[in-house]
Length: 620
Ligand SMILES: Nc1nc2c(ncn2[C@@H]2O[C@H](COP(=O)(O)OP(=O)(O)OP(=O)(O)O)[C@@H](O)[C@H]2O)c(=O)[nH]1
Image (cartoon, rainbow, N blue to C red; front, side, top):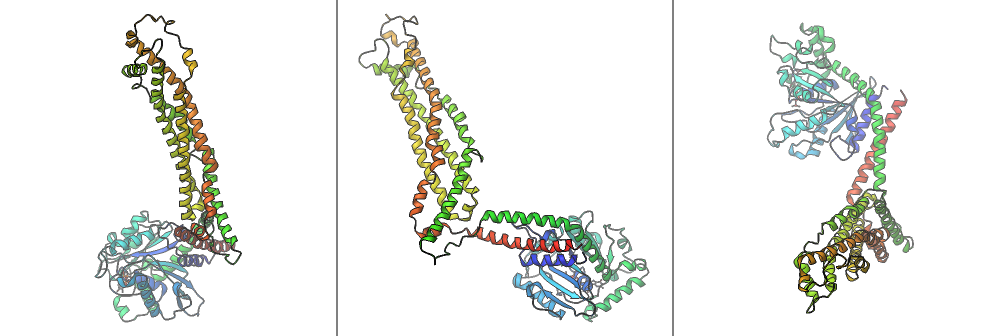
């Protein structure tokens, strides 16, 4: 397990090569689950100096304004004593840099390549590996210095952009925060402390580094901070003394600077007792040990996350389906490619059709809505028809007298009854049509559902549109048929009445009516009301029958047909299509193609990480 840091280094490099920088995206990120040390601090707090003294080399860009504009993932690899020091960039893999001034220049150039000369910042990291006998195995991520003001040529948003970038790195629970604060500034107001307190209030994963101790005012010292009394963190504070600007100008070399730093702590009375846990060398060793122990504790979690993500990615990829090389195989006899495409299209259509049927048959949700129309909506609509207008006394009088014509009826107003019943029954057409329309809407919704559930249709948007349109057109035709049939049921009731119903009614005389009543009297209110009541009970009896026969007709014409022949006409049309039209239907959605290739890349990353981790874990 001693090569844990190089394992994470390897995986991090693979992440960058395959486009996983941990930023928010629609793909799972492995980067975020890897422990890393992010270096944060305000501008001029001494970040570059700390990193350089950990490495023991001058290699970071210097200058005024915001110099670090992309995250720099710095991977240190300890090599054998006596071996040559060199650096390597992930983006220039075959080039070994032995001149560290050239490393500095390449960092600058690579920053500009990504951000242009605009002095903007970018979240895409630069990966730099340094191989040296003088380093410890360690990975650090150098982030842009937090600043309060934009310099000339930089957008005002840069202050916030930097803060957001830094926060995005350090808020992740796997990030160890190396918070750099200068000793000659009030600790409570340093940028590093302010931002790390925000994301790690208990100081569990923050390591505090105090720079510029040598620059503190005379008579003051940093003992309270270094002993954890001013601001407590889980880990003890580490003080460092870097090269001053004058040292840099005089080219004081890093090894000499480390020695001087050592002497400073050993000989300054206030810090003597702390000397063995101060200085950049101690900092590097402590970070390496800490990083290794964090990685060790996270390995099982990372393994299970990787296994789960590999399974998820494989599932999604298989849902997206394989790309179809539509024009492949033209060298084989002409008919084969056409038939191949036709069969592919028919196959996809059948999958859709199957999904659609499953909705109606109850294997998938939605078919129950049909029954809801029959059981609730239709009876309620029939009930709402109160026939008040048709059976008002005036209307009854009007229709009966009109039907009588010049010769009033003798016994019963036969013609009047018929007209009244017809004009009342006709109003049932409304609910009948509404039920047909309601079923149509449900069947159409189920088409959209089944389309969305047919992954193969997502792949081919042209085919998806055609299948959708064809299905809806079929439903439209079925709706017309169904409407005709349902209205016919109502019309049939209008044109032939059930005579038995009237035969069973008690006659006027039986009810004590007075047959000798004058014709004129027959139009009195009680008489008319009796006619109204008779008509109403007949119409209600018809309604009770239609409540059951309309659903039968609807199921016959719409639901059963939709299950049987939703795409029949489309299949016939497909058979007549020419090859280029068939090919066009199998043009893949560019978004699907993109997603598939992004998923495949991510899967490659996870699989290689899986193999790497398994190797290390097994060799425990
Ligand atoms: N005397 C002394 N000077 C220091 C110390 N640390 C840093 N400096 C000086 O402070 C200045 C800024 O240090 P840098 O290391 O460039 O700080 P930085 O945080 O990387 O700054 P930016 O990259 O501009 O954000 C330089 O002139 C350093 O020489 C220190 O411990 N003692």
